[in-house]
Image (cartoon, rainbow, N blue to C red; front, side, top):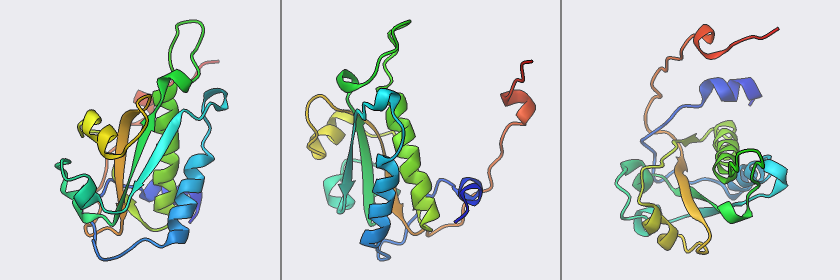
Length: 167
């Protein structure tokens, strides 16, 4: 799929066909896209966890989409391993993780799959369920699968509210 078509068609989907499975090749391409994402100073301070039985593994997560999708990808970040800006000591682990996750979500869209960012899950429970090392913190998860709903139309603020040009 054309890159700009991916950007234009990606939507948050909250209902999935649980019996329509994702091919291994699709998952590999999604994970490759995530791994190729840039991170500050190429530190790569993240861990992706692929959950193939989300209904069982993530039974504490309330969103129905997590339990409908054939798989879920969760991302965790490690602040101690991330680049820090020297001027204000801003740690970039959360920025890096967000870029990586968006690469995965856009790749899933290019594969004809649906996703939705979910950050509203108990971080401690996520870290425990996904068995990540103690240095990693939960950022977000996304169900991935085939949409069982039509995407809603979205509105965006006009460019004049979001972009400033300097000369």
